[in-house]
Length: 414
Image 1 (tube, helix red, strand yellow):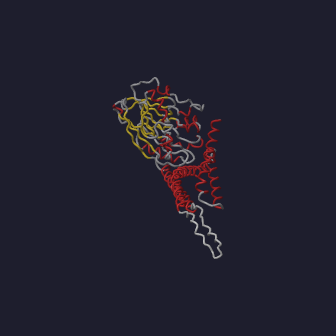
Image 2 (cartoon, one colour):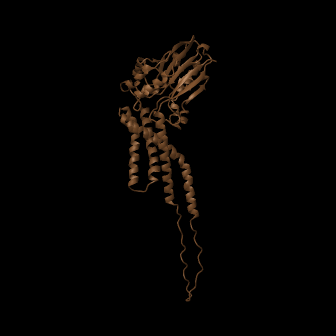
């Protein structure tokens, strides 16, 4: 509880500082004292309060907050990135303006010779005009407004593109992955893989139906749903998840929990997914006999389970121990980082999600700090790991640089 309170307090502080920075660059630097500056200040305050209100409100069932709140969150992020990127060129431009003003400053004129009048009295020299430096505030104001307009229009364009991408149909990617132990007879076994569907305030039944129809067209041998199906309870989203019962495959459809299941009532969702016809692999494995060969399909609970008290933590020994090492094994694990433990058990291939491919550039660079593979195929300690971008989104309905994805994994014999 203390850790959660600390995190919430930190998030509120960061949000406040970001909005203070945006207010300075977009309002204070571009307006003079008066009504428009006051209006801008009030708008910045309201938007700052909208972010935590959206986070708390959507969890409390106030779903009408989701669209305005999460859209502003995305726009806020790209405004911040662009304005910070403009800081260096803006500083250079201001320095150039200051130096030009100093060069243009007239120097003090040399005193003129003293004229002696008829009476012999010296007339005092005329006072030399000394101009003070003029740093051209009008040009600085124009520069600040230009930067604000550029950042605003660019951020709005990126966000609009991201909304269109995120809410559009997932892209189908096909990847061939060789497994050294795969029997020749099983060459070409296909696993339709999807993760991070994220049913919730902004995604409902139509989203699930579109994904199910897409997977069914693939006529896959296996279907793997690799966690983060929902952001809400069974009571709220059971109807939205119902189309999963229509998934078709030759040898079965399988599911493993993601971290968001543990925020949404994991025990109820495990029962509901099982009721819809998907086999939930909770630290266990299933023998897949196909085309005269055998493959072990294993699944572990998400690493988030540890410490929640809601379900058993990820247990690799239970899922992977005491098995025939001559068989190939494919592990379903929501987070790519699970491969660190999976590799110790000689896993041939791990299928994961969780990262969303970064969802919004440049977050993909931050994800690399936590996960060994962000998107696509990689290898860790001899174990191949494939990470699909996910078919939905979390938070802002925005995807930039990592569109929604369903992957058809084709296993190849050596």
